Length: 440
Image (cartoon, rainbow, N blue to C red; front, side):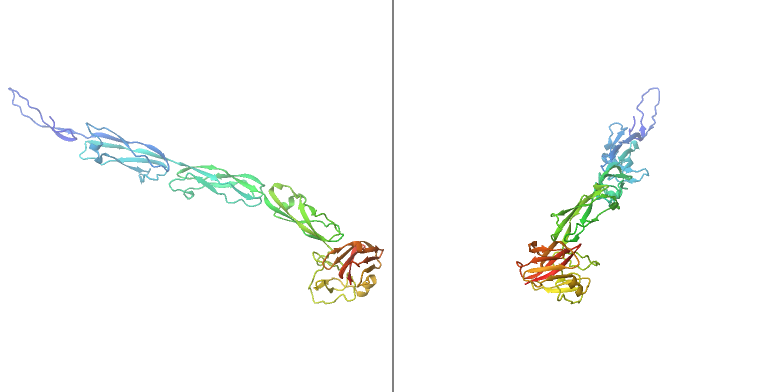
């Protein structure tokens, strides 16, 4: 018989042997039982970065008799650690992408009947998928490209763009590229825990705003239309050189050069080499038809420049020469004064002096003041059709007051006119003369 079956040294006790012929003596033997091999093979597994590892487990082979984990390991369970390629222990939460050893261990009950052989498992943590999408955006033609932005989907474990090397967004669109849709592409980028999938976006270039503002113009009565011009603002990329034609202009209401007033100049039809690059806004201007237009700093003979009001009050200097004894308003003294119908003191400035005798010899309006009939005479000149009568408020009166026109004089009947000051504009050759007549 033997005294035990556990690993170690056990006594072998011989059994009784009876014989009449022999004197029998018994001696004990020794039985050495070596620990049996017990293999603990840890299961391998694979996960995606961001998911927790599964519960680790091992297959244990080599149990003898009725043994099991409870009879071999304290608590009947194994413990596990993750180690990297440097055998450094890695926490089993938020495990980064890579290959890790699953190292089993157990607290073996002593004395142990087993020689335990541990076989590590492998945990493969595969990269997760991170999608990078260039955000669609837009800009105006002629502007620089904006800073392109990237939208991400797929970050886990609290990661963000700062945890990766982001891809670079770019576009083939240049500052000179025309209106249209251009791709925004993503290149490069790296992430230790992610496989980056890059998706393109689009850059939409929209038309730039172009303003075509008709320049305001002023002409005198009976003058032809001026050359219309525009101020164009908003050109990009030196595109002012790409004008094919236009702009053209419309005048409204119907233009007539013999009536003072303000007309609308509406530009249209600007033709560009690349018209899609601009959204054109046409801004109207005004055409003012006045009694006589004398541009600032003009060297022409003096005329009264009238816009919305019949006379312009000026306070340019201290000259106080008045139009005493004169009945004609044309080139002459620098200014004259009178009381208008509202008892307002009006001053009209003239820009060139001629002597009083020359005016009296060449032109006249008589009688002045008048109760009705008045004759306007111009010497050494020929009068033409085109006589306009206005009051100090700029109101125009019927030409029925004109009774007769001769080669160098015109007769008018102001009998039906109210008392006041009137201005009679007479066309003489290619110019006009304006006469002031007082109706009593």
